[in-house]
Length: 110
Image (spheres, rainbow, N blue to C red):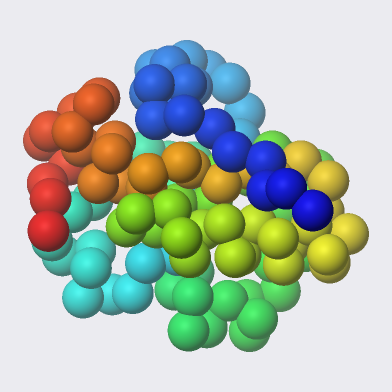
């Protein structure tokens, strides 16, 4: 099964719009202090705790963009969320690192 992905440029456009979606940041707390974005649509659920968050209930009617540092963990979580029955889930290709390089360097890098 291929993992659906979104580019950082597409995410940048979505963040500038009024489009309804959830940006699920699965990075660990120490990572958040090094690079972060600011948007009300961002939900934090570290990978180490993701199964405890009741993700299915939180996002049942929303498009979900899953993000991590480089896109590897977000691909794994996207696959898992799809296996849990969520339909509109995509992984951020390249993660926050690519977002910082190609869209907004102010989010920081590590």
